[in-house]
Length: 188
Image (cartoon, rainbow, N blue to C red):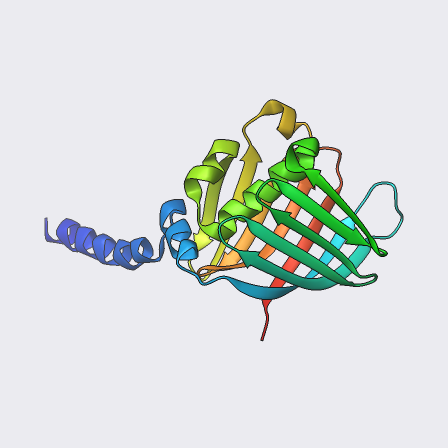
């Protein structure tokens, strides 16, 4: 009987630290929600079936909770995309275009998932996506899949990676096979 009890005690000791290192979506989003807004730099690579080589870009991201996201591309050409609530403003080559998010459902589903994640707003996120989380607080990956079949016909999934309460990457897998990978680094 003693060896069995010793095995149970050892198993409980072994499981203790593993449970402490576990991560769940609610606790991750709670920690993200408490992060102050900030700036980051990005490097994005887009893999498009129509092109032989990937498109590379880099620049700065600015998120102002709960729903303002700015992407300022510096290379290869200056461009600015600002999403504020349900409006998108694109500035490129001295021209400015504004449109409602509902006019671009593919963009809207992507932006909503990213903004909800950056704001730590799990309730908003789960209205549009199923969310599966894997990893540890030191290195996690959140896999988002659109709940609406019409949106799923456009976007297969979005994978957001991070460490602690920081988002470090966003990978978008479109249903047509195109994808983009953005790596994010905090600005100094």
